[in-house]
Image 1 (cartoon, rainbow, N blue to C red):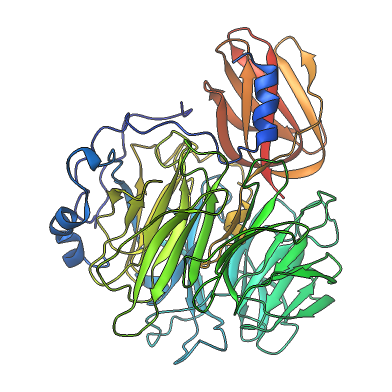
Image 2: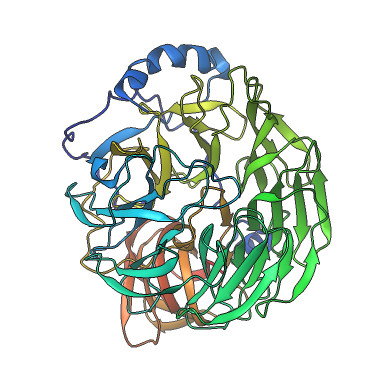
Length: 589
């Protein structure tokens, strides 16, 4: 069950697109385990518990659906998007992508458009930021704008070097961006320039990444890169820590594999220490387009999956963190995106969802969604008949429908293929009325994931898998930025949350309260609980044990997801009496 779920949607907003097709029953979808389902976590709990693009495109959706959706018994349960609100983003300029983050400090995610600089060819040198424009989902009018949008910019094909993050650690998010070859920090509430410094190398603006190489209480290091060859690591003031040269790929990924408080860096196929030393290199061709981290086979250790430009094969490979090859899948020509999830809860371990550029020819190019098992076998691959148009993006979509299941979100498919949601069997289960680009985030008053479907330079439409209360997230307290959002990339670099409480003791601190010390401050994404009977409970977090922040209240199920920071986690029953037999605290590393 999802807590704080409202039953009445807000009034229909102005400038709304055509309504989505009627939703069929949502009860038929199977309930899946949460995204972190390592065997060690399951064993712990089992031991403890005895059991539009334009309106024209939108208007043609009904016709397209008839051709795309399976019929009869093969049709999967429908979980169609419901429109919650829309925001006019035309002031942000054409060709602008979105970032999500709480820049107003009210507790709810806002959106910032980032228009890249104009470039006739961005294949070998990335773009910088031309303009940033901030919006509140509750208001719609621009909050502030930095830079002047350039009407020559109509599209983009690379990452845009901007992120939303609390770099100085004062509790409020800033907007970070590379403009005029300078790394700039803007106040999230006002857009005022706080400070700036030059990028550390030539063309070092293909993307920016927030990391923690020095073991700070929260990540305060930065990674800059050129298009394909070099990365630079600096502190928050621009002082160079180290640099690394290699096949960087599109989006290096920082992760603390040994849980010592300092992150390693997956710099393309290279596994690099927090001090910049090369440990091992994946034996794969060309460069990686996408990276995913998580415990694939449930052995308790985190694994790495690379989606690579394999030049005809060898492009979806899984490795242990020590560089040992777990498996290689040769069925994809070029794995443009990959992502981990429990897409098939009927199978052991996690699955790898991917997007393969099957045919790279300009005139006949096609792409295809696919799914690979925890042991590396291809479970299915889409047989797409329409052209791929070189732009398709696939992303994991977690807890869209309140069952904590994992689905595949695919958008920007082009050539008549409308954006939608697919299940773990390869069946389209939902279609979006607006054929735009997409961002994922928990914006409504629950722990489900919503989708922001936006047409660049026009509108952003907020869709949910059911009714939601847009005002419920407004707490008046700044919302910490989740790792997936502060290291956002169009190339899909993400991780499966791990158990920060594994091996740690829960202490009973009152008749209805239990607490665990996680050893140091952590980025938290949720909890799983095992009580002796059904109860309602609250989850609080604290950095020091003196000041506590409520992360989730009135929880009635055995799991809840949220975004929080804390070293200590406290669970308090607020209705009913029971004993806490075990709990998992999920978070990113």
